[in-house]
Image (cartoon, rainbow, N blue to C red; front, side, top):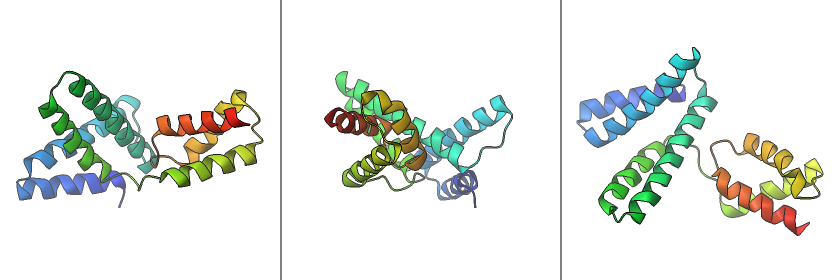
Length: 149
């Protein structure tokens, strides 16, 4: 079953179970997916759905940061709960040591020699770690490794 199909099935389960909080988040995910499909007139595959879900998690993390600055812990908690639901559909995140090993491998394989090669390295890592790593953390790791060369 496709990821989009799984999300749709989970919406039905949440409706039957009366789980309003989960249902709200699942509907938000489906609405975001449907919006892109309608705008671009395409049928999204699993990779595209993962990209949408990753973007939703990033938006919520940004919101949490803003809510905490504004001392609105109640709103930050809602965002954290939404992230927990969305992340259930994302692949297992890479551990820091796995990410570092992947970065080192790509740097070696691509022949990167300085920070000027960052785009080349990031492009390859983005393809390998799609949905499994926060690209902000990846970028920081790549910069650190390339500056050490």
